[in-house]
Length: 420
Image (tube, rainbow, N blue to C red; front, top):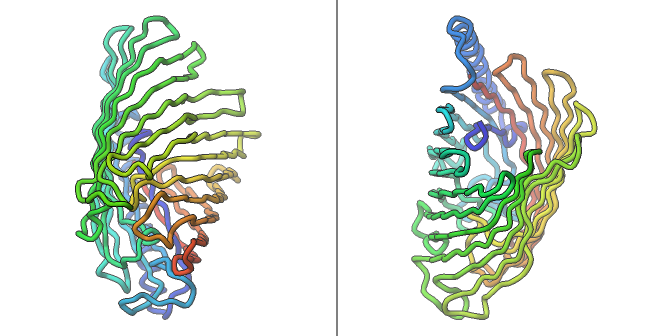
């Protein structure tokens, strides 16, 4: 499964204030390990008896215990306005169900995931979220192909982008469809449409909610090698339903993009994917907020050996579905990730990213021109085919125009994941 792959990543586990916290965290992990071992035996026996193919239903279970030393992303030596501790231990329990099957020329991929987050100290943040996706890869004869998708993602809003230390859950829903008409074995005309709706659980985040409808059309190229390139023109209309136009903000926009996108294998050990293009965004009432410029996101992969691989991602993007607290955000960044398969059971991943965000006109001016560096290391151990245990450490540091939005955060954790 690709679009609905279930991945549970730990965020950190360091020494707790007292021995009791350590013992509680250890019990969480041991209980999940024991349950995972038992479930793995049951799944393996069922597979041996039934001989079922890989297609069909899959079940995922995960549990992580993490510790963040700066949960609310506050400057050094600053405590939460409501009092209490800067740090917290977070437990995440996740259950997922997936389905994948091919019916002649049609392929259906679906998945649903429930995650419960439990905070040891700041338990007012406890919440269960539900995410899911449904995708239909369709074909009609030899000349028509396409996809239809439904998506819902729920996730807590990052405390790095707001000065409100309250629970806020973002629910993003998206529906889309596209079609290719192959008038030549290698060439196609393509069209697509998509609608996105983003909402928050707290009333104070109303200004960040938005709706966007988009259509696109272009031409695609797909040689026999399986590589793919598309030149696409995209038109989007956006609306902020809870904003009143003023000199600083607007209630809607129109965005036009011209993009060259695709994926291409350069050699047996290297490839690239992504898009480059030009974006123009115009606001309905406040023309001084308009944006135009090059945008893109390119990922370059290199695998010099069977055990070692690298990926470099360079991006200049406008906006993000989880950071729209202003009119738009231009993010420029470079990230590198290296993966080393030390043995058949042990995988080491190191990653680092530096990015800068420039904002048009924000609710929080002190957040303008923020620069963030994130580094992480994880070690995964797979004692059984379907069971993975991952320990990770991460450090993030941001500097912004206003010092009250600078922060340093350290995250350590351990995660247990079972898929069968």
